[in-house]
Image (tube, rainbow, N blue to C red; front, side, top):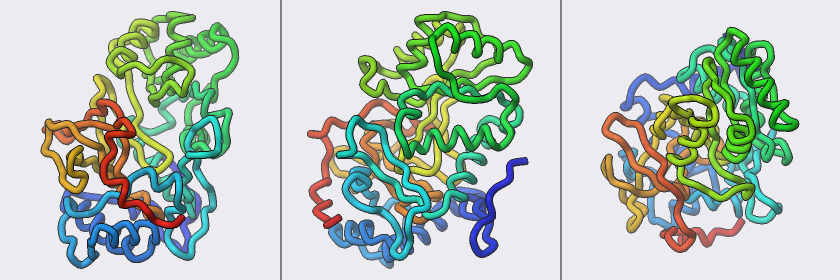
Length: 337
């Protein structure tokens, strides 16, 4: 079983994430909204700009979602708290990077551990191989922290980070694939493509999971083409995906075909691209809003810059990103850092 660091005052970090049904999720989200509207200065100011009062919000659909760009220019954190760790987004310079101040890592560890187990079963059943060169080259990566944490919590022998020439990496992957355990090869898109093209192989016991993004190393391509090329290079019929970001402490996963699902303490809603305060029904493309109850001490209600749509079965697809010219409503963010 996974074990966690002690939580302050004897609290169980997973209690924040223990959600039994949609009604429980909505009630927990509304309670957290009211807290954060009082105690997170940036979010409180944003709600005031919108004229939203906590007592007037009685439905999840009426909660304002903070534009994710706020994490670049503001310290999104409850008053009186300091960050035990600061996760930082990728980029070539320090300017314009998102920073997520996390007062206690126990809740993040609970979220990624239980989230992985929710979708993939006990981490002990997996040999985890990580091909994440762009993330390893910079400090403050929440993805590196997550993968290191999963490996430390009991992943099978042979788990670890991959580096070196493509041939060396390919041999290690193939050895693990023949080792009798399920293998998870998690990697940034450009590195997985480089490996698949340089050393094509036929994997039989491995799930390949891309974390998205070419990080400026290769031309960006749509997910469908990326998955086709990875399937061909690794001899697989589907590619898994992880949907996460610096500003969130939870992840959604896709077991193939680009259809993502959230753990019980996370939900995705789709906002209208013309009216960011309105939500779209399933099947209609719009901006992705994320409710992440693990973001207890920053902001649990994030309007991302991703485009997507909900599916009738509560899954969702990620279809691309907004151009800067398409982001509406950000003029409300004239808030002092």
